[in-house]
Length: 504
Ligand code: KIV
Ligand code: ZN
Image 1: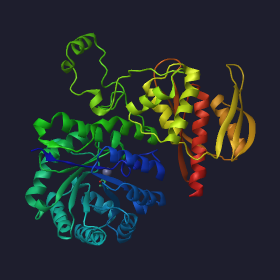
Image 2: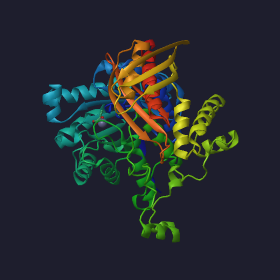
Image 3: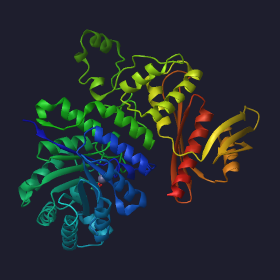
Image 4: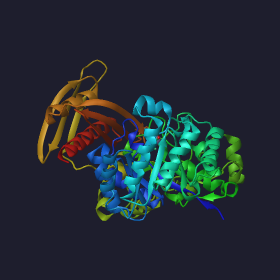
């Protein structure tokens, strides 16, 4: 029988450490709910000591998600562990994931600890974590650049202190597949008590080997893989959940392992994470890229028409991705809209449906035909609007090659109408300056990107921005067929998030 491989998702912890990703509690909860639908085994919900928002995310996810293991990260430091334990108080299946480095490079230059001191700290951390839960995971950070015998001594100390999962991080994404596999073999053969614990792998993708290393490690005895949706994470990210799940499914007869992942939720999960994090997915990204099930070359199309298996090892339907079948438009009624959103995997409440349908009608009036990609963008945008302190009433720009751009913007500010005009270096700058005049909020624009959601000159433009106000960074997104309007909406979305973070 195929051996079960546990998937531990770290999108909300390691993923959230990626530059430019800032998820609030509500957004993290939404991703956790989607991971629940995906049937993931463990959700690493945050690093509670690191911020109030991380602490609250772990608390809220623990309350809401009852069927999964919920993990919280803690350094091998008493206060970290106590705070993680408190954050997990409501979890049905809590996991404290504690870590310390095992490599000489980290111990000497970063932690200023001797090898012996680090082992004592690891053992104490696991013992302390066991006061809060039986399920303690211990990670030896930078394991792949550590002395192997020392690493095994550290793991033995963790096992003796009560760890149930030993994680072997390739923290800097340096290991070659055969080296990593040999390390797993070495740990299995040289660590007393290893047969009583689960070996977990956590591979970073700096050299593009995270998924390959994780799969090979499983063939050498690892039982848990740490993954993230779309591969988000520190630097080049972590092993991509969707790739790991589909490799294991597609090659199940050869690997003889299985995950419990509900594959049909993969696309939906990827889209949600892409939307909420603002991290784009390359069109050729395995499994979830826009074109990975599209056959362009004549010879491939010919083969596909004769028999799909000539050029297709997986079906788009397997991962919940469907070729667009039905085009909705301004004449489409609520019934067709509801049916299509359900087919795309959305399960909307009545209130969400009202908002999404209104957004759809508004856009269909302007654009005519609405594709599946448009529809996903509209629904995602409408159902998770942040509480609106500022909202757009109207805008007007005067712009051209030989004149200075001018924008006039009217906003509703906490229920009252206010308007202002400004010059600027282009229509977006002029609009943002007019908004600054109204709101009095001076923020720095850290990032701005625009993407066409679907094809055609009338495609929806999706604008993502990151702004900074003091030490608070906020992400904003907005969509419209008019890119100036999309820019204004994303800017207001970011300002609303700043207002929200000031309140909490
Ligand atoms: O990459 C790493 O080493 C980590 C640990 C905290 C597990 O993320
Ligand atoms: Zn990591």
